[in-house]
Image (cartoon, rainbow, N blue to C red):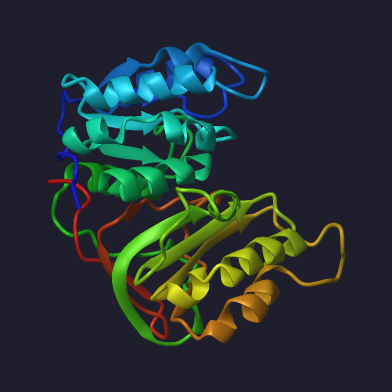
Amino acid sequence: MRKGKALKSGDTIGVVATSSPVKEVESVEQARAELEALGFQVELADTCFLSYGGYLAGTPEQRAAELNRMFADPGIDAIMCLRGGYGSPQILPLLDYSVIRENPKLFIGYSDITALHTAIRQQAGLATLHGPNATPGLLSGIEPLTRDWLLRAMRDPAPLGPVINPQGEEMVCLAPGEARGPIVGGNLALISALMGTPYELDTRGKLLFLEDIGEEPYRIDRMLTQLALGGKLEECAGILVGTWTNCGPDKYPGGFDVLDVLRHVVAPYQKPTIWNLQSGHGLYNLALPFGVQAYMNAAAGMLVIEEGVVV
């Protein structure tokens, strides 16, 4: 698996909007200022300032061209997505995976960026980092624990070691067992949306990470069932369940919650499964390297990253 270089003070991070636009342009400048305060130079893609159709940061062609350009530009050392939202699957067939393969760089983002993580890893063989986007700012918009873990992953080529949840947030075993393999996955809605496409997630022998926001349990059931019917739960080595923000049973009060759904749909596969890994759309968003080796012991509530995501 190819890896981007470890970042140091003075390196340039390219910030690109691959999905939805920001609501306030001021937040783009705030993102720049806070990355600069952390010691990086910043180049903002044109799409950071575009809006198309109200919910897209430019046309698919514009967004793909900016991401292709940033991978090709030797002056850019890493790429961070501005935000998630909607739209990244539109640009998957427009990306130049040969350019990405020949210019490995650390690529960072989450939420809608799940589609890009999957395609870039599978089509270009590049390890990526599922972690905070550039907005809200890395100094003002996220918890210090989240920021410190992200910066360590960006700067240190050594194995990250055990992933430690914040105090009071224990990882819980849903199905016991041990497994080892690269972490893949991300946002459940995006993984589901890629089913049946050339960019469908390959879970064979992998540790499958899942999280989401704003989805009711019956919709989560539907998407997990789609993964199950597609063989994704049977083929994976283990399952890492992240945060589920605003995913309560509002339409069916008193009905199944997310944990109930996981017990009904996921647990029967008897794959080692951990619940409550603090990564995703919650208060904390611990960065997870995708495509590098990790080890999990579900009964012990343990996840260990055995490689760095940079060199």
